[in-house]
Length: 209
Image (cartoon, rainbow, N blue to C red):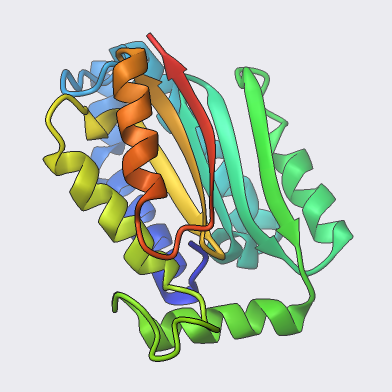
């Protein structure tokens, strides 16, 4: 999902969290978050990598913070979103790939004309978290709503650790990464996402433990 208001909120959240945790993190070393199946060191590295990428975005072009999503799991990076030129596309990907701790970059950044991007933002602003537009036969379901459905359904599903997944919906295509503890969990997660109203495609980068 690419949405100006939500993107800016993420930036504020990131800045606030970094400001609050900067001193404790420096003093304590790697984070310990036992709810996830990532090790504390992996969580620490992923946080550092993402903060570094967002920091570069803020220096080069603040619109990248709103139009590009960065998700990371065990130093594997997933890039989603839309930019309005090849120049911006190559700029973003160059900034992402600067960190040599990154293992893999899953590139799903789309180049679209500005009119398409503006129309997308307008639609997301209009529908917000509502389930479907009035004319669902011709208009896309809100990506915000799709993402909220994924969160709620995975959280409620027995045998699924939702904290081990990261996802984005862009123009009703869902991109998801993380780690399933078994092939059964993997199939369950993908089945849940595919059944959500409005999802047209699911692109998975989920590993199996």
